[in-house]
Structure formats: C-alpha cells, structure tokens
Image (cartoon, rainbow over the protein chains, first blue to last red):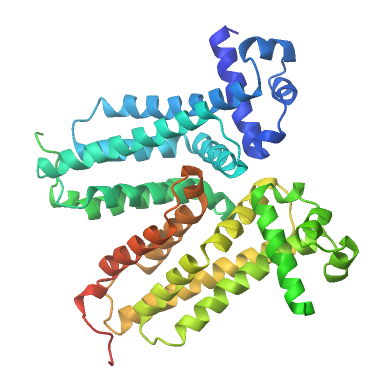
Length: 201
Length: 201
C-alpha cells in the first residue's frame, strides 16, 4: 500500500470511529486496530489524536469539494452548479453524515481548537460562497428570478443540515429522496423551471 | 420542594447533562450532584439510568406539546396552528436542542430500547399528524393553495431538524431568526399571504 493510500485509509477509519462514538472517546490504538496496523506506524503518519481529528475532517471536506469540482467543470449553468453541490452530497452521503456528526460533537464539547475551527469555517465559507455565487450569477443572467440570496442560502444550509444531521435520529434514511426533493424545491424557488433548456445551448 | 417539582428538576438537569456529553457517559450520581441531591433520593424517583433517559425525553416532549396546546386553543386558523408549533419550538429552543441531541445520540449508539423508540415515534408521529392536519384543513377550506402535503411536511421537518441539530455545530445560534424565516417561507408555500385576515374574522 502506498503511503498516500495508507494515510487515506487511516483518515477514513478514524472518521468512521468518530461517528460511532464521541471522538474524544476514540483512541489512536483503536484507529490503528481498525486499519489492521501497528499503532507506531499510525503515529508515523499522524503526530497525535488532535491532528487525526483535524485531518479526518479536512479529508472528508476535500472529498466533497473534489467531487463538486469534478461535476462542476462540465457545467456553466448556475442551476447545474447548485445541483452539482447537492448531488455530491448525495453521492458521498455516509461521509457527510460522519463529518456533520464530528463537527457537531466538537461544537458541543466546549473545547477549542483553533485549527479545527479554521477548517470548519473554511468549509462553511466555501459552501456559502459557492451557493451565493451561483444564485447571484443566475439572477444577473436572468436564469433565476429576483430573490433574496442570503435568505435562500440559509434555507438550503438548514435543509442540508436537517438531511445529514437529525435524519439519522429518525431512523428513516432517505438522503437520496430528500436531496431530490430539495432540487425540486430549488427549481421552484429560483424560478429555474421557467426555462426548458440551459442558456447558451 | 414538592415531589412533582423535584421530579421535574431532576429530569431537566438530566437532559442538560445528556446534551453536554453522550448520555451513556453520564451517571445518576452526576445528575444527583447537579440537583444538589442525595443519589439515593434520585433513585427513589427514578429506578435506573434507562428510566431517567426515557423520562427526561418524555418530559421535554410534554413541555413542547403543552406549550403548543396552550397557544393553539386560541386559534381556529390552520395557518395559526402551523405557526403555533414553530413558535413553541422557538420559545423552548434550549430544551429542543437537547432533545434532538439525545435522540440523535441514541439513534447512532446502535443500542435498542423499545420504550425509548416508542417515545420518539410518538413524538414524530404527533408532529406529522399536527402539520398534516393543519395543512389539509387549510387546503379544504381554501385558506391554502392546493399543495403536496406529504412533501411540505417533510420539508418543514428537515428545516426544524436543521435549525435544532446542526446549527449548534456552526456556532451561529440563530434559532429565533431561522424560525421567523421558516414562518415567512410557510406563508409563501401555502399561499396564506393571499388572504389578509383569518377566515371567519
């Protein structure tokens, strides 16, 4: 196994274990065991538990962003950009559920980690910029109706939060269906259904 | 302190502690300490930890339902019924955040408690019935436009989930503002803004 693959495996297993229990209760030894790996080797890759927590979160964020970028290059249409962001959430649903769990547990823990705070802020900042950018461009080009961008971004954020955080508590795992409903709602809210085809096509 | 007040205090402190850590990590002794009470007395009220978890959740649900009923009797308008449910969530926001945290932690724990499952199902069943009932009556009486009730109920559920579960993770506590936005959205979605006054007034 190449170092990069091993790193990725450790981070994936760490995130999985952090989502099954509270991340503070998971030891580096347990993560090493889940990877069928010597604990000393794990420490060779990640200096300490704090680093592992932070990098596990960053790794998940990177996957989400990379998935979005891969979908996005194919589209110039602002509506397609919005749906690309939603589709990548559906595709990576198990990872997103774990990410949200880790961020929520951290926020509620009362502890402070400046670098972890920076990762979380960067993620939500990026999401907000992406949604705001697509909505604003859609309004400018007449693809969308005139609307309150800030309000709509918050609404999308809350629905994504609902889909990926509390839904597991209801034991009615319907991520794909919920994302599809959110896309329909976005069509309605933006007025994107007024046009049959993407502009320029 | 009357037995009923003491019971209520124990359940409130228990729910608070369950929201600060994972409920499985909180001991009956800690709950007793938080109430400045002998642990034996706590056991006099609640047989064991499982009972405390379940009753703490039921107690929170009861507060939400009682708050709703108190607001609701004043209204016959289906839109006012919807907003009464949202307003009571805003009023009891700290309790709702703790409730949602406890339910989510339980769901993710992998353990099964039939009576706890029954409480959670009863709560979501009641919420669904309440929202569906108000929406259906509104459509029948022409107060609301014709709409997909099931889809709209799910949308409201997801937004409430988002407001009360993941939002703490963003450290941008905006429950009151989010509830107000959701009320505006409901006005728009139901078409309740077509009428200036409640019917029959």
